[in-house]
Image 1 (spheres, rainbow over the protein chains, first blue to last red):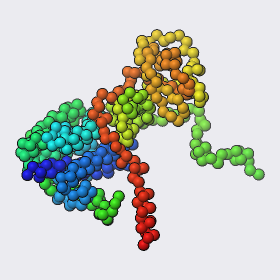
Image 2 (cartoon, one colour):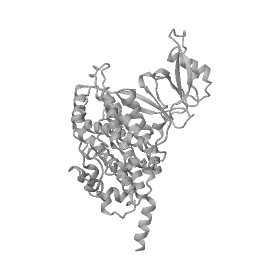
Image 3 (tube, chains in turn orange, purple):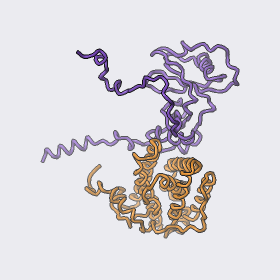
Image 4 (spheres, each protein chain N blue to C red):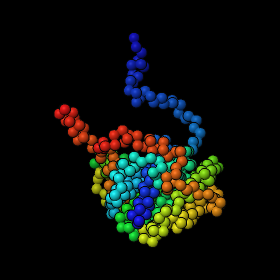
Length: 251
Length: 210
C-alpha cells in the first residue's frame, strides 16, 4: 500500500515539472527581452531535468521507462495540477504562474529533502538549489513589475486573480495523504499550503498588488486524478509528436 | 570616363552601409525606455579570481544578477557572481601587446581630496581574453586607484587594459551556497554532447550490408 502512496506522490511531482517545463519552453525565442527569454528557457530545461529524475525513480520502482511514461500516456493518465497545463497566455500570466508554482515547489522539495524515503530525500536535496533560483527569479520579477507601472500592476493583478484558484489545486489532497504522513515520507498538502500562503502573501505585500480574499477562493481540483482542461491533450500531442513516429528509435 | 569620386567609393558593404551623417551635431534622439547595462563577473571555483563574463540589460542590480546567472552560468558550475552597473567601471587606456598600461599612466597631479574607499582592480592580460580580478586597493578616486594599483600590485607585463570598480558598487552573490549547488553535469545543455556520428555510421553500414 505504501508503494502506491509513494508512486502517487512521485507521479504528481514529475508530471507537474514535465508539463510546466514544456509550457515554459514555449517562451523560447519570444520572451519579453533577450535576457528573460534565456532565463525562462533555462528554467524550463531545469524542470524537464527534474521530471526526469522522478520518472527515473519511478522506473526503479517498477514503472515504465521515463520516455514511455512521459510521452505515451493520454491526458486522463496525467497527475499534474491544472495550473501547469494552462496555455502560456501573455507574459504576466506566465510570470504569475511561475511565481505561484515555484514557491510551492520549493516548499515541497524542502519538505521532501527531510523525507524518510532515502532516495526521494536525496533527489529533493540535490534539486532544491535550482528551484531556489527559480523562486528568487519569480519573486524578484513580481516585486519589480508589481511596483512598476499602472499597466504592469493591473496586468499582474488580473492574472493573479485568474490563476489563484488553479494554484490552490496544487495542494489537492492525495488519496494516500495519511499513509504518507504516517510513514514520514511527506508532510502533506495541507501543511504545505499554509506555508505557501504565508510566503506568497509576504511577497505580494511588497508590491502594489491586492491580496486575495483567501477564504472565498474555490480551489480547482481534479488534475491529480486525471481530470484536465481541454488544453492538456493538444500539449501532449505536440510534445510527443516526434517520439510517437517511432517509439522504439534510439536517440 | 568614370569620375574619381566613384572610383574611390568602397565596395565593402561594411563601409558603404554606414550612412554616417555629415552633420556634426544631429538633434538628440528622444529618450527611449532602454534598460541600463550591468557587467558580470563569475568565480568558477572557491578561491579562484573573479573573471569578467559579459553584460546584461536589467532594471536594477537584483534583476541583473538573475539574468546574469542564467546567461553566464547555466552551462557550468560556479560559486559566486559579482554585478556592477556599467557606468561604475573606469576603463584605463589600452597598452600594446606584451606591455603594461601601468608603464604609461597619465600623471595624476595632486592626490584627490575625497575620502578613501576600496576599489577592485581587474587586469586584461591579452586582447580577446577576459578581465580578471587582480586585487583590491584603497584610494581616493578611481584614477587614484590606478596609481595605487601600479605601486602595490606589482603586476608583471602584459597588462593591456585595467578596469577599476568601487567596491561598494558591487553586488556580491556568493553567500548562498545552495543556489550555486546546481547539477555539475550540464553537458545535456550543449549540442556537442549529443553524439550522433556513431549512429549515422552504424546506420550507413547497415544500409550497405543490405
